[in-house]
Length: 392
Image 1 (cartoon, rainbow, N blue to C red):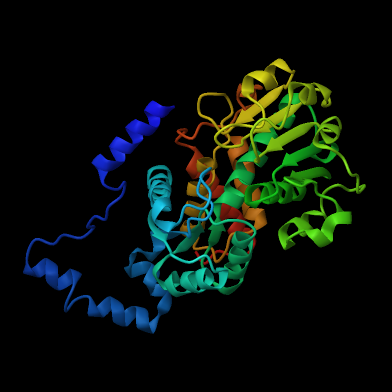
Image 2 (image 1 turned 120 degrees about the vertical axis):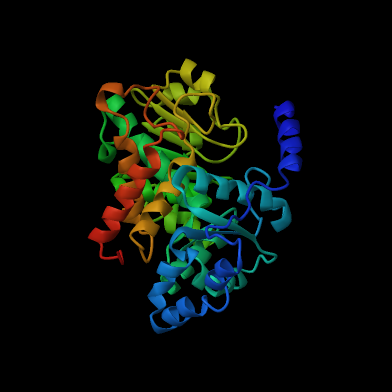
């Protein structure tokens, strides 16, 4: 792994940044300058002033989003600040462009104040067709996203929350087919209740999973301790741990059909997996080291195993979700992204694995499957139109 880090460092120095701007218009002579800038540019300005919606027709707004971060929750590195987070935000923009043809601009800002981040996003909204919030720590990220969704008329999406949740849900849809179980009948344990974990719990619940247990560094999420929790964890007490049981992770695993990990390394033992119900599903995705390794989960009898890694089957990677999701939202000019649109994205993703190709090692498509962004985009746009949120 050290060689990968060294090579990546050399390449980043060579690239001097992973993205750049390019001209879409010719600029070779005075005639070109007249059209692209003064005096010709005055006419689209006048048209947009008369009809603000024309900004989508005459500028980049129809296909460009902002990737906004304060650098407080970068990958597995934590709070490293906006400058140190910039390589990740550039990388996100690369993925948007490569996988869905969406232009994206990284904007790393020097504040941790949620109100200032909200104000910043509102101030730049006229320039962008959508805002992707990235690597902002919980629970602040939830407050920021919810406020912006209420106050802006462009889609706002916090990928660290919902991108992983969409892919986990898609993988679960197909994994349940492999093991012959139904969502409403299973019990799921989720380790980690921060940005990703809370969204996973909420999305699985919305999909139909009735029995969920959430765990964090303080143990099981339980109504009896609600007064000790932040608002995000407190909300989870309404949809998890239905019988208000004070269980250890090992005890909850013995009740579970499925485990989802977005927490910390080595929390799950082979014995825990062995104690799970018939044909257990294990999605261990802690970064960079999972809750249990693929090899140990397999040896313990897990039927379907998903990881965050590309060198094992069933890579649960949010790149399967966010490019297509924004592609669809931009294409229909959706005013927001809803829970129903996210579930539609998950169903679309799951549909890419044909029934005849569905196996324990193939429940989610590859990030390089060229169909992914198109199918997700269509599912999202169709749902937006159905909900009356599409302006095209």
